[in-house]
Length: 438
Ligand SMILES: Cc1ncc(COP(=O)(O)O)c(C=O)c1O
Image (spheres, rainbow, N blue to C red):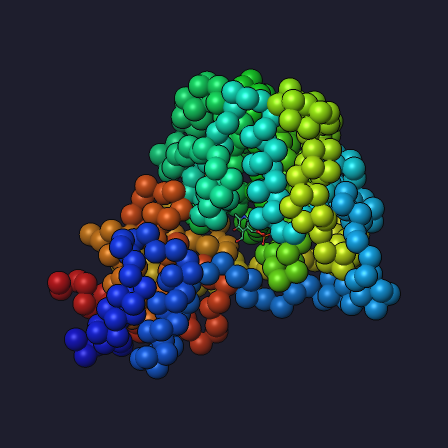
C-alpha cells in the first residue's frame, strides 16, 4: 500500500470519531470535518471539492459601495423591510437586462441570501391553499433546502430528473401535480450539484403545468448566467439567462449575490416575484392574516417575522453590482468564468483515470463546465467512492445527500488551486493502479 498517500488508520479514526452511521449520507460539514482531521494528522494536502464556497475575491464595486454606505452612517438605521428603493429598481433592471423579463421594482425583495429567500417562499407558498401542503423538489438539489422544510414541519416530495429529461419531464411532473397537493416546485438552474441546465422546452413543460395545476415555481438562480457555453453577460442583448418567467406567471426567482458576485459572506440576494403572483390574493393567506396578497404577506408578515429586513449596507453593495452590470461597465461573467476553466481541466483528469461524468448531458448536448460536476467510478457506490478517495487526499460529497438516485459524487471546483491539477493527476494515477487490480 506504499502508493496510498494517507495511512488508512488515520482515515478510519477520523471517520469513527464523527460516529456517522452511514458514511454515504455524511453531510458537507461532516466531510469537511473528516478532511480537516485527516489533513492535520497526516500532513498531506487535501484537494477539497466538498464545499460550494466561492473561491474568488468579492466584486470590488460591491465592497466599495458598502464601505461608502457605512461611512455615511447607514449602520444605525433600520432598513425599510420592502428593500432599499435603489436596490429594488436595479434588481428589476438587472432582471430585464439579463433575463429579459419584466418584473416591477416593487416585486423585487432583498433577502439575507437565497437561503432566506427559499425559506420565506416555502413558508408563504405552503400557506396559500389548505389543500396544497407539499413542496416538490426536482432533484438532485441543494440539501439545505430540505433541511428548511424539516425545520418548518412541512411535507416534501422529490424525484431525480436523471431519467426524465426532455418530454419525459412532463409525465413525471404531472404525476405529482395532478394529486393537487403541491404548493410549490423548486429546482436550480444551472443545477447544484449536477450542473445540468434545463432547456427551453423543459422550462415550457414546467411553466405550462404550473399554470394548469396552479402551483408556484421557485426558480433558484444561485448560479445566475453561469452556463458558460453562451455569453449571458451582455446586458439587454440575447442570449439571456433561461427562465421559467417566459412560460408562466406563477413564479418567483431567487437571485443570490453569493456566487455570481462572490458575495456570500454578506448574506444578500433578491427574490423577484412575478407581478401577477405578488398581487394575488389567496384564501389561505386571508384566513391566516386577515388580508394581504402573496407579496405583502411575504414581506410584511414573513420577512418581518424572520429578520425584519436585510442588512442595510449589503443592499447598497448589491444595488451597485446590479447597476454596473446592467450599465455594461462590470462584466461579472469575466470573473466567474474561472470556475468553468477549472471544471474543464478537472474533468479531463478524472476521465483520464477511468472516472465517468454522471449527469453528462443536457439532452443531446454535453453538459457545461461550471461550479460543480458529478463523477462515478465503475463498480463503486457513491459512498464507497467517497471513502476510497479520502486516503488519496481528495474530498467530495456523495450524490445520495442531494436527492439523486445515481451512485456518484459531487465535486466542487471553487477551492482548487493552480498547483493542484498535477497533484490530482498523481493521486488519481495511484488510485487507478489500486482499483484496477483489486
Ligand atoms: C442551489 C443553491 N441555492 C441557494 C444557495 C444559497 O445561496 P445564498 O448564499 O444566497 O443563501 C446555494 C449555495 O450554495 C445553492 O447552491
